[in-house]
Amino acid sequence: MSVPPRIGLTYELRRGVLEETQHLLRARSRTRSEAYTVWVGELQLDHAVVREAWPVMAEADSRHAMVSFDDVLELGARVAARKWFILAQLHTHGGRAFHSSTDDAYPISSQVGFLSIVVPNFGSDPPGVGWAYYEHEGAGRWRSISESEVRNRIVMERSWWQKLLSAITERVFSSKP
Image 1 (cartoon, rainbow, N blue to C red):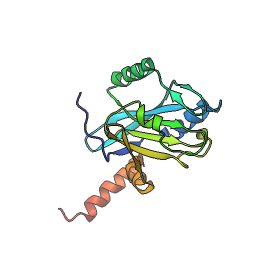
Image 2 (cartoon, rainbow, N blue to C red):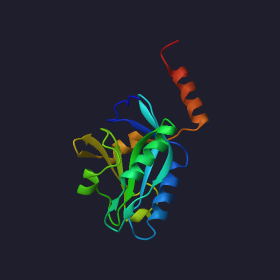
Image 3 (cartoon, rainbow, N blue to C red):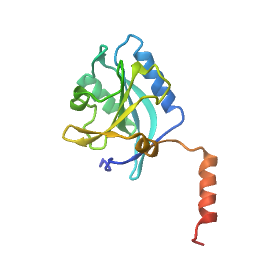
């Protein structure tokens, strides 16, 4: 299966994914250890649809977490069975959110455009608060994504009525007949 390019891709989160992500990270960080989860879903030509957040088993302490090769293979098999992709990795830090040299060197995926999101304070803050976003540029290089770019690229799923309203207004205000 060929993988479309991901650099600059927009990610549409299904309802409840952000809250489920926060719940998983917070629950797994109760022991004051780093916690991991991944966003999984469909990868389309112009955007990705994040369908679910899945927990990832990791050997962890307060400063570091390591996902075993076997767990990565099992995760890959689960994703492949649904014909989905691992779209982003998310993990907690005990203090501020930043991408460490360990984070740079050992992502779950080395796909160019893959997202890595770091959640501060072991996930104890409200969803999205203080999160740091990074995009893989290849060869171990990661680019920090600005808040304004995050707002444009990581969006919540629109309800059916929002989609309908958008379609109606596009048709009404379009210069095309």
